[in-house]
Amino acid sequence: MSAMIFTAAELAYLEEQHLGRIATASAAGVPDVAPVTFRVDADTHEIVIGGMDNPKTIKYRNVVATGQAALVVDDLASVEPWSPRGVKVRGSARPALDDQGKATIRIRPTTVWSWHLNQDAEKRFGPIERREVG
View 1 (cartoon, rainbow, N blue to C red):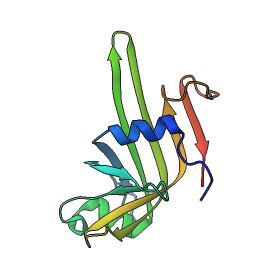
View 2 (view 1 turned 135 degrees about the vertical axis):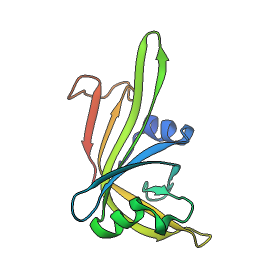
View 3 (view 1 turned 120 degrees about the vertical axis):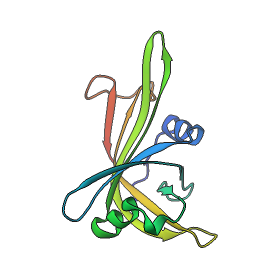
């Protein structure tokens, strides 16, 4: 893994959020998006996505079929002034078991986008920062 996956500001943001949206596609290319709860593994910085009966879900079957996923976590810091912020992660994904034996999805980030989180970051696309990390 790369030395820096997430900045301190991105990690702090992800730790305070409760919901994200995972995007996957089937082997035939049929897209799917689903709301999920998640956490960031403190050691690997992989995104860990749980769920009820995960192996029966489309997202899980798509990860098994393609080994790829993306996750978006975003919110509005304020509406006046308009201030969206968030993190998007794309990477390789795999099924895994958590420490209680429950099926999860783990995303190993290869690309991270964030907006309105890193104060001193060089911006490539307006307020959006993009980094290859894997």
